[in-house]
Length: 141
Image 1 (cartoon, rainbow, N blue to C red):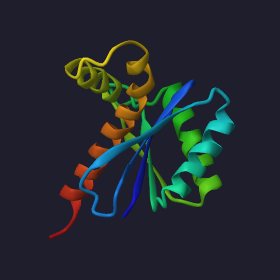
Image 2 (image 1 turned 120 degrees about the vertical axis):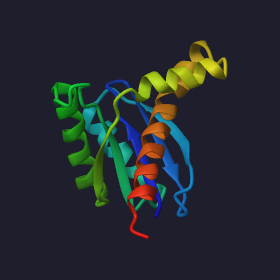
Image 3 (image 1 turned 180 degrees about the horizontal axis):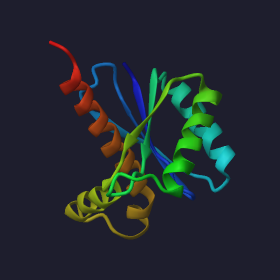
Image 4 (image 1 turned 90 degrees about the vertical axis):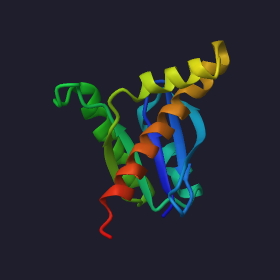
């Protein structure tokens, strides 16, 4: 199944995608869009262009498991993406993914403008890889 991963942000939204084998997620780009509705529409279109059968949107749950305003905004975003794309959308816990993305970029010595341009796609890739790992381990044998 082709799955499209999303790290929604107020300014930049990262995208990732996996192939039908679900072995590995790859960055699929970063959308720079501040308009909430336009971002959701463009994300829905990108998922359709990727022939996605499922969209996984990062859900920033607080460390204590509670859901704050940011988590609610991501849930609203996910609803609009599903409505616009016609593709099922799943919210996925994204705690610490941006921190992990920055750590990966530190290891690869990615700095400055280049870092800013890719960090959200790396975060989307981490979200999607986490979901793929869950699917692999949750499957009945």
